[in-house]
Length: 347
Image 1 (cartoon, one colour):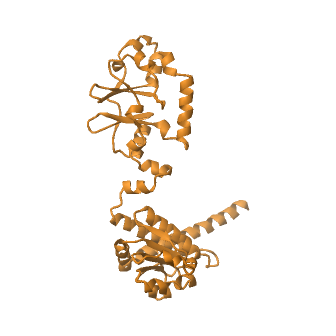
Image 2 (cartoon, one colour; image 1 turned 30 degrees about the horizontal axis):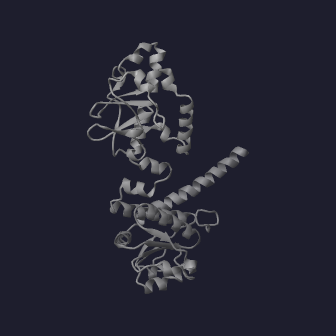
Image 3 (cartoon, helix red, strand yellow; image 1 turned 30 degrees about the vertical axis):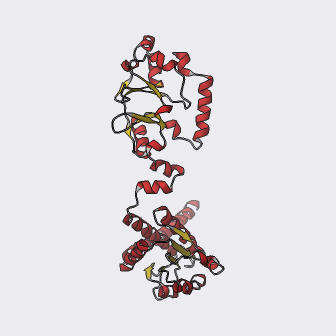
């Protein structure tokens, strides 16, 4: 009994998804020159794209506006009801309006249209009916098509809002590509969170060379590990030549291996004899997500960063990239290392 009930629920859910997916495919097949005209108007806009819509369409409008803004097109949302009570003042003559209404007859939207037209602000309508009030005021109409909502009553905004959102995404992303919007542009607008972190360049998250543990090939292991630790603890010593070229790396794991193999005599040998020569490194300008991929692929925790001449610029340490509160984590690590300096006492 429970199994048949669950199966019925799954079939209902699948029907909703199929209905909305079919509507998006139909919308893709409906695209015509009007879409191209809309993109041209948007590209020529020297002000902001002001998006408006009421109810569920307004919520979709807010998301479309946010996508435009994050992909290179200045945009903000204008609530149509508030517009009639002073917020029309945000409109500038070099702006463009994108109005969203499935019926094209939403009262709160249609009442602002004469004011938009009087200021000769271009208007793109996202609606199902070209001959609606909204469609008649518009400079260009991008049609959503006559849609049947996915709910059992056929009235709850579902299929229509899904199609509106999909068309809004297509407008935003086609426009972004035509503008030549780059990874760097995207990163500049997304500095926070894991997405922003991935898009940064390595030099924006690396430890600069002055905060790294360095040694010359002729320094003994004991000398290197007897030196004071930098303010930010790291488990890697980078070995550089007299010309500051990166020639090797020696990690805490390498030190532990010497002790594990009872090679205590190696502590008084040049570190150049026990280091890993020609270590994996990345060039300045590499995206952080590519550096993280290298860390993962090669199962290492530290990744030196070099410039075009092979000179050391800094270090990517996995400790700096994991966890939410990196600064607090680094403080905890440094505090622990100052109380229990592993290397100087061991060596």
